[in-house]
Amino acid sequence: MAETTQHILVVDPETDFLDWVKNQLTTPTTEVHCAADAKAAMALFEEISPALVIAEIHLKPFSGLELLRKIRQSDPNAMMVLMSVFGTTQQVIESMKLGAYDYIRKESLPFNLKVIVDAALNAQSELRRATEFKPQLTVEQYQDNLVGKSDAMQQVFKMIGRVAHSDAPVMITGESGSGKELVARAIHNYSRRAEKLFVAINCAAIPENLLESELFGHEKGAFTGAVSQRMGRFEQSDGGTLFLDEIGEMPMPVQSKILRVLQEGEFSRVGGNSTIKTDVRIVAATNKNLEEEVAQKTFREDLFYRLNVVRMHLPPLRQRQEDIKLLAEYFLRKIASQKHLPPMRLSEEAIRLLEAYPWPGNVRELENTMQRASVLATNEVLLPKDIPLGTEANDPPQPPVSSEPTGDSGPESFPVNALVPPASATAAAPPLTTQGFAGAIDPDSAVHALLEAAKNDNELQLLPWLEREFTIAAMKMTQGNQLQAAKLLGVTRATLRKRIERFSITRELSIQ
Image (cartoon, rainbow, N blue to C red; front, side, top):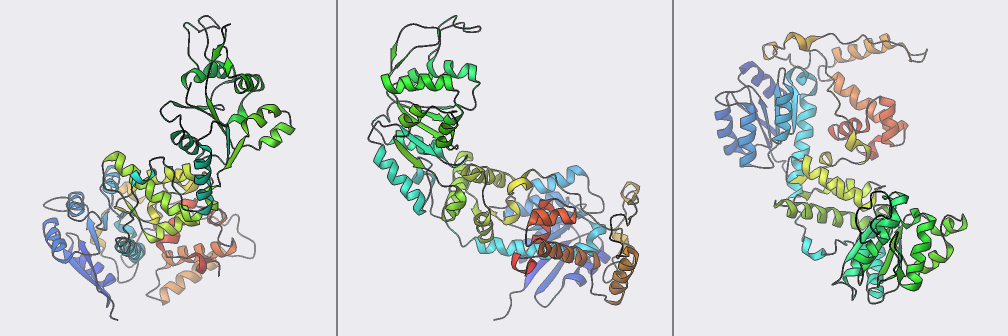
């Protein structure tokens, strides 16, 4: 079967530069089209629908940013790279805001052009494959926000149905972020108390000296600052359900009063003498092992047995991998519904990435990740590069590392007239030192040997090659552990992941 020809559109006012790029990128399966101004580029884009557009930011009769805006309006999934000799911070931010795949400086092109183009074309291929996915999930299907098809979650759903009709206290256990409050709300929604209030309180979030007042209310003048009578959570939820989250953090004096409510169905406000009757169903949740807390005398044994009438356990997300895709798609549709936008979709590669991640923050972390991805994504289909996982979501962006090219650097001599950087862009880099190298390694000899190899091989792009080889070697040395590999290379995990994606380094290749 013959390979499909890919079309690339390059836009730049310099004829020499266009010739150089065309010579670099043209292959039997890649056709390069050139335009010298933005108007001609727009006409070509509409005619050939290229897989990738590479454009100078300084164009006429309108700028590269405006060209990007027009192209993205025509095709929201268009893949476009902007470039300039020296881009301003505002230009870089604006280009990414408008949906550019990347923004690069021209002086790095002799070393990075093919790498960037290959990565962009791979991303475009993922987008096209992803258009085949049309998930049928709707927000309305999950009015209780409980999503899951795994056996473990099916058992949870069955248990909700069994306990909803009764008034027995329920204890929900599970890791933080696993969805305990959602289960508590579902128990309430399917019970005879559904018409009354569901009131939730996090026992760990309220200071000990205020928790008693929060639960039972207080009379005017009961303590400093009590300027009026206040109704507590037990009164508010009378006839309904009171959800006590993180009950393992509840101080012992308050535990005693909770026990009285469970035994007698009555309580008194702080500073009050009158007894108040209440009819409240208690659903408690904890991520602690309460049996151990009882053994250590930090949780009342009698209260534990009162609360632990029905026990439900929520498995962590990493133990129900088959629910990850379903949950991620649900969250994307929920976000789209809230913002009144068309929902985003996940590519196959993005789904595999999500399913391979351990999700230490469970469902809450997955929802937050989908929210961040929906904000940062530049296309309607989420790719792996759009999904920040773990600590990399908070990693600062890494500055690009590039070398100062000369007239004969890179393959097929890069046109010098395409580069006129300002003086501020040519500050000398700090000298490389040999401190820290093992005595048996001579860095000068190693560098000389590599440069000689590049000199004898016109096809070798030395810096990208070195970057790729060091990345593969580090991944092999650490058995695929990205955190350790990033530490070896002296980069952040986010930077390492970008290199793995850019060079198409699969896990199997890196640790074989």
